[in-house]
Length: 361
Image (tube, helix red, strand yellow):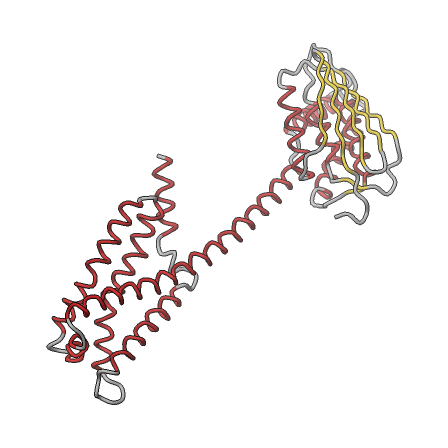
């Protein structure tokens, strides 16, 4: 089924590819140029002066069979045979037509000689054997000229396709980057909303603060996710809000700890980097299991040293850590240092994040 769909798609894509996007102009110019060459050749045999209908008609009859062959070649043989890897069929039909076509031309001209005497003069200027050889030479000449035109079209099409692929790749990368930045972990979202609702139902004094922290993180996502960089101080502030939110809505659960050492100063980071590390780790908590997390950040001059000490019985911990690594690499578009050590249910994660300056885009 998939193979048939691909074949239909390729067939539809290749159909008329040599006529799309203004390429038909090349066909008209090529046909006219070859027709003019034939008419000029016939003018040496035509004694009539000025514009001769004999020359026009004879030129059309001489060129018409090849034009029919050529468009069979570019509309059928190439898209339906060559580009579908049916090479044996392609070459058999092509060689057979090239061998037969001169004789079709000769037969058509012989039938037209009673009506266009110039064709008879054209044939009688050489012996029949030489006339046949000349026909084969003309066919190869025309075929080489027209296929050179097709090669030029293929070259232009490949350039256009390469540009489209490059443009689509950039759009895809931008879309993936935007999704990576804006997509909030669904488990965190549900747990946060459920926790806030639970606080409101209990009339907890922590409910207003939890709502504010949740709103701040969402607002930060909305306004900073489209930027190429964000102040490190602002990123740390929202990371702190995320920890406060977790600790307030999960007041009955073990608390997560955030420790920061160093001066954020005039430093920048790609938005949501630190939050995307923390969010999936909050989802590793399971009821009636031992759980704890210490998220430690050391701010150096050129990079952030992040150490996470996590204790969790989460079955899919390796999968979640790998997802964090992939998302970080997508955000930064490079391979970051990301190491994990495991001892039973204890995980030590070490991450190095580059620091951007104000002038870095």
